[in-house]
Image (cartoon, rainbow, N blue to C red):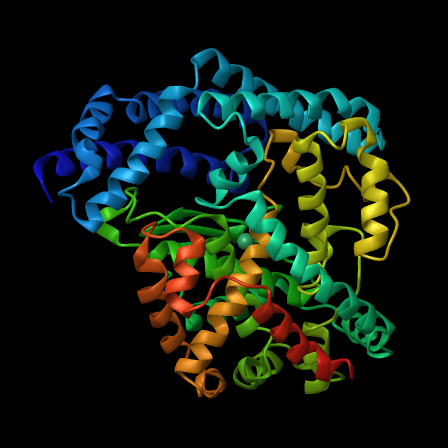
Length: 502
Ligand code: ZN
């Protein structure tokens, strides 16, 4: 690397280290904070945010970037180009937004969250309208500051997934919707759906200690390195941190033992990605994830393709029965498999299974698109939601709490975030079939409790690439094909077709 790049890396890593400290405070807030300490923590976070901003907008970074970008960055290696591109992206965000705007947005985010929580509790959408209108206005202004004022929704999509556009998502989701809606109707009509529900209700009274021990064995066996990460309890499961300090969380319910297990396998997928980034370049373009969709592909692949499969359970089921002999006595292996793969349409996104989940995302994308194009006014959201829910999910919310008020995202201006979840499912399925083509015995490995081939393949092709490629480029390079919903549809038909007798 030339000396300007080396200096740039040092400055970028310093800003990233400070941001990681802020992340750790955020983790601690969710996991350990005494109830009376919220205000003090707020002050700590605000002080640290100012420090992070100063480090990220350091003028020397701008000078180095200008120098390195000369003549179209000619003369730089591929690695250097990736580092410069990402540093430019971060530097522009840190320097192009006026301080007054950043402050206005921070105040509005916090106000928006509380307004949403109140509106949801009172089922009062009207009180939430001015918040959403203001948030949309702020997003448009933010896009304009960064030179994307003519395409604010593309700007928001790109913010979460570099290189993504509304046109690309529209094409992918359109194709998925045509296949998925009839598939879900078929599953819903199958008598197996009711049986899956009954089996789920048999799984009761699993002691938390046993659940904790089991999920730790499973996630460790998959490859999560507990020497460089940990798992704790929080209200909503998440994964934060990176490199050698990855923090996952889960939550336990005695009567829903599969919940904590599958959600912690999901978080393990995120954690493996972060643990697999190149350690010496953390925080640079080569040591950062490729975006939300690729991140989500890693969590979904381990949770769905791997942990909902029969071979996976062939290995882990005996241990599960050993830990919970009384609770599992009346449950056959087939019933367990059915409970793990229960499908039933629901109004609430976070309660959805892996099949119908995608419909919830398509619904949100279609609504966001119309909000940004001006076709849909904020005050008309509840009616639009109802129509879309009937058409896509096949269910009508009885009130806004079960409809447009259910998600927190828009209250903080996080438009364009939802599509990543569904794109993650598509990428996961496409990676999965590529892995199977390269190693046809992959599932036989799982049945022996060996997950090392899959993890190493992901390490090499996804984790160690950092942000060298956009999500779409990464998929093209690893699988040899453009991102498409077809592998996801194939996977869902294969898994659920036989199980539900379609
Ligand atoms: Zn996730």
